[in-house]
Image (tube, rainbow, N blue to C red; front, side, top):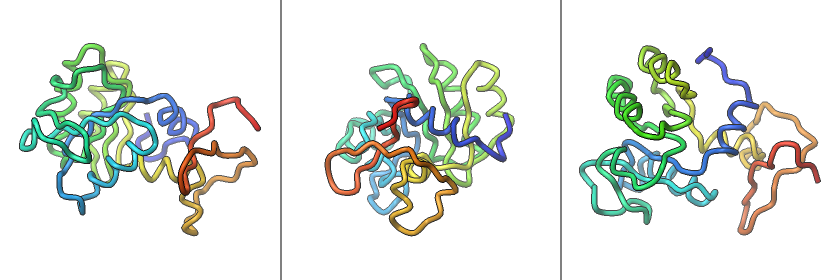
Length: 177
């Protein structure tokens, strides 16, 4: 896979099909990016499992914290990594030991490790690097455009309306209103 460019359809398909996310490197510090990404994804309907050995047994963002991926009590669709690039090989090895395997491993902004990504892709896992699912969700749903940000996407398709203030979601593929 070309990790310098991802097709919008691929990102949208991932964000539309994933339901459970294990967030490796989740922080209890509410000013850290992982904290607001966790809260945002939870608000969008994803089940997010914070992974942080130092906070295991506690909660982050109202969610129970686990020490390792293997401790999560249900299958994980996506592993979202908030760790430095040199920690990625260990996270990938831990993810490859899961049964069933996650569908996606997502490395946050500034995080890239092509060798570890190739190992995961060889096992059939989709890997996204140097991107943020919160930003991509907001961009593809049209929500980010409300702040005047260019989403690089023009579409006549209406976003799915959800309850609450400024709650747009990704419309299921093939559904038009």
